[in-house]
Length: 281
Ligand code: 13P
Image (cartoon, rainbow, N blue to C red; front, side):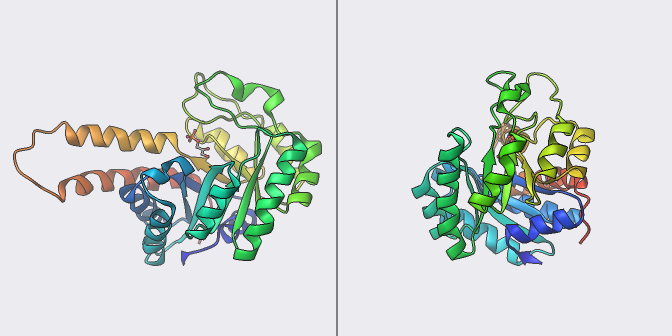
């Protein structure tokens, strides 16, 4: 159990025809809750950091905190740097202890995306670091209804060439999801996913996990998605719990009050979401 490579978690997903859940986190309470929630559910999990959040927790602090709890956990835990388009920043994260990174070249042309992603993979493999690429583009739900726009979808004819030339560990694909809060209920294009999945054995990743109905997620997991990223709903719960806690009338100093209030509720949420994962340990 304990701290494992993302590659191994993805293989576990592939073997079970199932999906590993990956949560973005920003501080110690969130990291600990993800891992405690996974233990409660008896499921593997991944903890991820958005690069912009290294101002809250520097790469090294985030990596070491995750490893600390992971090494003491009864379930396998992976660590991953989410969306990063900056080569130097990816190198910094690897140097600071991240064992898996996302090289996000999804707004580049196909050739530029291949070149950027391959450059990251070539360095990362020397450090046994896994790399997730993105082909097609998973946009932002709040901006528009772009999640349903087919021109952002991953093109099946490009998948094989992309994974062969870049040698990514996993591939984020676009087939009807977007990041953030959806304006209307999304409808994943499962037929499109099936075609993408048939084009490669590389594990596929679904971004924009917040707000997709569970029945659609189950279909996606049964048809080639081996990792799902969830951020917004976890951050929103964290913010709501902060608001609730700090709305209290403080009459005495209780340094333990905040983590004692917030962690069990975050842990319960994570354990609940992990029911989606059909992986058996
Ligand atoms: P949501 O914030 O929509 O859950 O998406 C998270 C994500 O895909 C991070 O890569």
